[in-house]
Image (cartoon, rainbow, N blue to C red):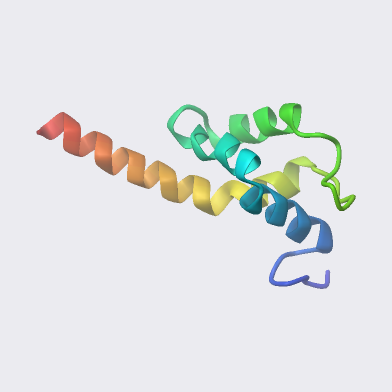
Length: 89
């Protein structure tokens, strides 16, 4: 499979672009690591998102998961660190 701007495909790149650069979409998934597993977050986003990005790329399970996975895991680690600091303080 040919890469597209560092992503596995045009579709994956375009979905990541919209999820990370549209303020409302970014805010939608940004609070999820504190409340949902990654799979639940992906399912919740898919239920909320339209079928396609404004550019016509399809919001599917894999493209949404790839788009939020790294940031999701980073925020989860930070949340757990902060939570552990509060509990031990």
